View 1 (cartoon, helix red, strand yellow):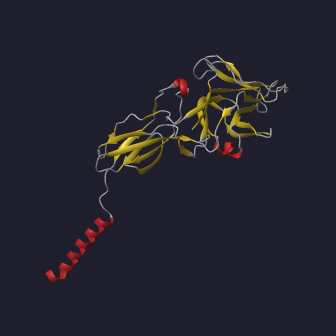
View 2 (spheres, rainbow, N blue to C red; view 1 turned 30 degrees about the vertical axis):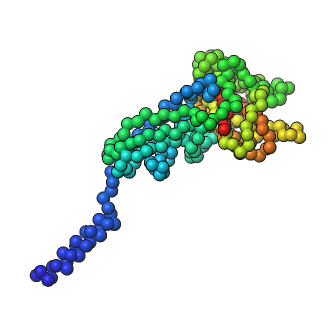
View 3 (tube, rainbow, N blue to C red; view 1 turned 90 degrees about the vertical axis):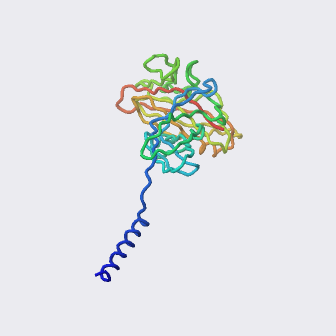
Length: 288
């Protein structure tokens, strides 16, 4: 009997050991829970509004990639000893929800953890503008509107004006206001001062907006030979709630060997609609 069953028993032991090698016991992760980031506005005179729209987190543990997570998120960290966490804020590039990118103008939240398998480690996630960020243009409409018509003689065009109506102001004392009617169904405006943006540097236009008609945002530049070049680089859909968008400027800036640009805003009243509006606030160019 022993001779008959001993090979079977040995086989079972080897099989059991082999299964454990192939399917080792899984480690229980420690978790981080990120609902949102607290934005620290350390120098509002320099950086402008604290408004932000951080939509993702790029997470590293001891300089090793954990992953990219849409917020809010509960993030598993496989750790068996104390280590360092780095969380880089991410944004939706040019309003494209499927295109998340690290926003390197926001600081990395770095902190240490001690593993607690199965548990969520509490942490208040914070960020602010990085020291390397520069702000060549900030417009909050508190002192008026810096925009004029692209074609001053076009009687069908309206202008971007300042509104102080509390129901229309995002924050501060004013917001930019486009009001379209059947008599003035179009708006194509440009800001009045050149904005220095260096070629080769990452740069973004941040802005808050609310509208019941679509509008587009673009850039204009004048080349050394006097030729004016412009391009509308993003279209934004109507939204009945204030939204924030980060518009990438680098591609347009790379096309032209010019150091200065202006921002253009354009909107048209849809057919069959008697009136419409676009509200703007906190336009700022952020670069290196």
